[in-house]
Length: 629
Image (tube, rainbow, N blue to C red):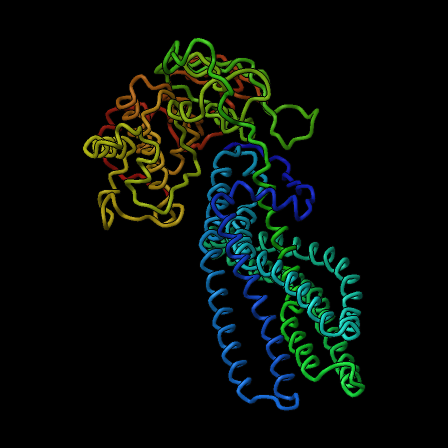
């Protein structure tokens, strides 16, 4: 590939939102969940109220049994009532889970699908600037946290607050003196909660970002395991990973410390004031201002409140982490889609004036992350390819060849000028239609963890895929044209599952499968970014000649790094310093262009154009595998 080096892009973090604003961002995913969430909340609140009713039964029981002439049978009545209340509480907790868990999983699923859909629509420039691990952590870890928060955190946070408020009301009804003592412990908690919110939110965001970076490191190391092993750099990779992991561990420990300090406060203070309330309660009983049953009911109520009070800190922390997850999700969803379908179809319908024609008109291009005012990488490119013509694009490394060909299927958009396919600006096409007409194969062949069949037919026309026989014929033709007959000899033939990114295949095999995929798309314009670099000259020539036969009428623009490729093209375009320097046949350019002769001489010295042009020698070689180590 000849894509020039360019500055490392920087991601811009989205603006901070309040929790209410973050919740509004979830509204597209909450369809059908609101009434079930409300039913689950009602069930959970009733369960909390039932739990608060039990201390009231205890209070009545104690007062009944201890009063003069009390009836022992009241004990059995109270036991029966508490048993019924206990069963009711359990049933309500079960209903809460039934109502909320399935739709919460649905919210996670819809958000995940929406994120993946957005990732498919976002331009290549976005994926250039975002590490894949960050996107992976957002699509898996963050959304899993969001599901748990919706299913548990939101409901229990509301229920805990309601339970505390109702419980405090019961405490005041029992003894306002004891209730005031209990409530006094809440003042320091409220003061500390403000600082806790800010500290925990920052720690949570940092840990989630670091987890994404760690995922990126793991992914890169797994994909590059052959390189690490070949150069014996596993130890260095491990040290780098350990450093990142230790940093993340430190952040998680800090995050846990912030949470534990807050939880210790909301646990210790209520327990302390309960002890003080006990002493005051005993005094009030001794003076006759409070009954024993009232004291028993009061402390039974505080026991019920202990769980909600202690969980408030954890639930608040969970809510802040969920808010951070929503913010991280929104950063991707809010990224503008710069390359999209036209808002309105162009005048004149969808007819194409010249099928297969490809032209560049005054094209200028600068990468989006390059500073304004910097010199464009491509400057005033004007070039015409005739329908059915094969044109080679040559230039020194960094001249912008790969960038230019990526403008054809709109992987990037021009900064100025036009790219025309079939006589129309590519920006006038719907993306699906444009990419049906234009097929591209890259030097770095990316295959998917799927069968050979599915990889090759990935871009095949829908009408062909609907007919199994036609699909098989197209598959055979594409493999034969790309000299990829080896696929039939794999353990399960064309249904053999290849490894991740096709790494179970050799470099030449991957390139031929990727080329077969481009051929199976049956494009009007075929763009080849040096996709045969791992093949020997003879196999490359056989592939090229088959392409001319099978794709007769298809316009081909090929980035060339070999004299053999150049010699087989109808015409050659020379790209230098972001401009088209000259266009002509190979012989014409050799005769008149010193720059072209220099570029050709910089290609591999052992590639002989004369041997490639010897058709008799080539004919005997068309069946060779031709993989280059």
